[in-house]
Length: 185
Image (cartoon, rainbow, N blue to C red):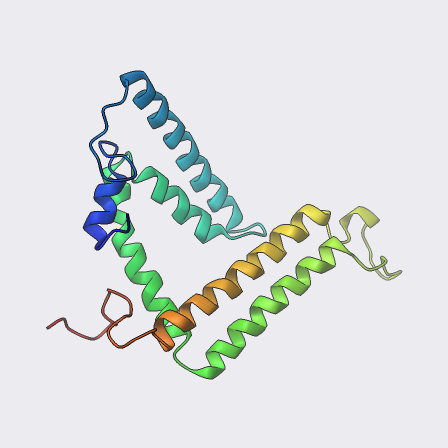
C-alpha cells in the first residue's frame, strides 16, 4: 500500500496500525517487544549517525533513518519528518538547478569513492611520512568501504534528484512540496 500523502504515511507508521494500515490486534507482549526493538534500533541509528557526521559514512542519512524509526513511537519524532523532508527536497532541488552544480556534485561523489579506495588499497608509506606506519590511512578496509558506500549513496541521491526535480516523468508529477519562494494556489 503506497501512502497518498504525508498524513497517510504517518498514520501507517502509527504503532496502532500494521504495515497495511489495519488496526493491530496483537498480543500485548508482542507489542511491548516490538516497541522496545524499535526504540533500541531508532536510538542506535541516531547515535551512530551523529558519530558518522565526523567519521567516514552517511551521517545525515543515518540520523534521518533513526528519526524515521523513532517516529513510530514518539510524536516529537513524527513532527520532525515533514520539516526534514521540506529542507531535503529544497536542497535537492537547488543542487540540480544548473549543470555546473550537477557536474560538481558528481565529481565530488566520485572523489569520495576514490578516496575510499585509497583506504582499501593504500599506497606504500612514503619515506617523508613522520608518523608510524599504522597512521598511514588509518581505519583500513572498513573505513574505505564506508567511504565508498557514502560516495555511492551520494551519487544515487544525485540521480534521484535529477530525475525528480530536473526531469520529472510527466507534467505535474514532481515533489509534493512547493519550491521555496512560491505560494500554493
